[in-house]
Length: 93
Image (cartoon, rainbow, N blue to C red; front, side, top):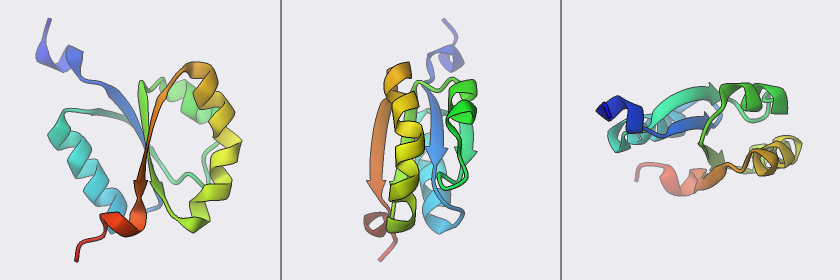
């Protein structure tokens, strides 16, 4: 199997900015294959499903939490691994 074939496909859900940039870099360093990068406040469940990720990385912040309700049933239906990153904790000191 080719090394690229073993990479996990990941959807990165975070608002634009430094936190999303750092999470993208961390995903790349960890060997994740980014299949969707979207602001979760603008994401609909169909877009998430169409990207076919194996995992979803969400940068949590107050403005995002309500948006999670819209796509969380889709993530459960697809059996996705969902990882939450506290955006405040991800900021550089």
